[in-house]
Length: 124
Image (cartoon, rainbow, N blue to C red; front, side, top):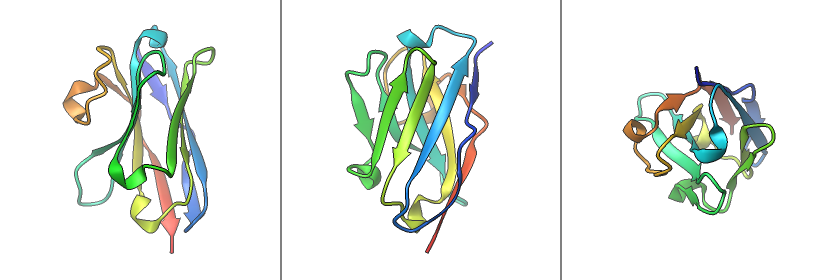
């Protein structure tokens, strides 16, 4: 059974940085796209970043371009989200996700597996 664990998250000041890891197990993740979504209170879940199975394609939402970087460690079946220059509007619960079909679409319905989410709070 596929499991995604996101042990990171926390409280950081504006302008600070944070790296979110997501450890995957129970599948052959080297063949799957992986991504990060976030959901702020009262808002819909939105795609933040996605990376293809071979790392050759990386997509980012406009609000995080130039500040966030998605990467993956194939040996550890782990995907990371490096978040720099954090802003209060980045405050949300962040979710890791897997797309077995490697589409990297910014819609929640195309992602088959989800982590439990981790809270990121950016103080002003």
